[in-house]
Structures are given as C-alpha cells and as structure tokens.
Image (cartoon, rainbow, N blue to C red; front, side, top):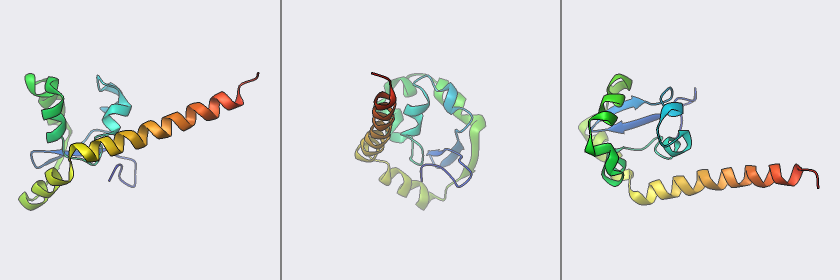
Length: 111
C-alpha cells in the first residue's frame, strides 16, 4: 500500500494507523521523503533517522493524525514488512520516477 484508492497516505507506528496526507507537504524532509514511508511502519524510520526519536516533536505531529489501530497481529506484521530493504526499494522506485520526469523535460527543451 502506498496510497489508498482516494489518494490518502497512510503509515503505522506502534500499532496505530496515521493519515499523513495533509502533513506530507509540511514534512521537514519534504513530501517525496515522506512518500517513501507511505504504507510502511515508521519504527524503522524512527530508529534510522535519529532526529525522530531524539525529541517528542515527531510524536506530537503524528498524534492528531491517528485514524485507527491495528490488531496486535497486524502491528507485528507491519513491522516485519517494513524493513530497511523495503524502504530502500521504495525510495529507489520514487527516485527513478523523478529521474524519468527530468529526462522527459530535458528532452523537450529547445536546443
């Protein structure tokens, strides 16, 4: 899951589902960086990007975005599926799409 049918960006953290759609344009790392987390559990991100865990700021931003809760079984599964490898794969896919757009734009520029 990257986006829901209606284009919402969902993530999970500690068993809670968050809708980060409206927050995406305000994410300090930018919308594209947040897109790499869409559909994943944020545990890896909070562990990998120390800035998320060093203060309560990220948790405070997430709190009002909560839209549901996973069962314990689903929460464990979400963490298992949200590996660093999964994140890198999504990131490379998004970067690849961005590169294609740049190439198309460059190819249409006058010489």
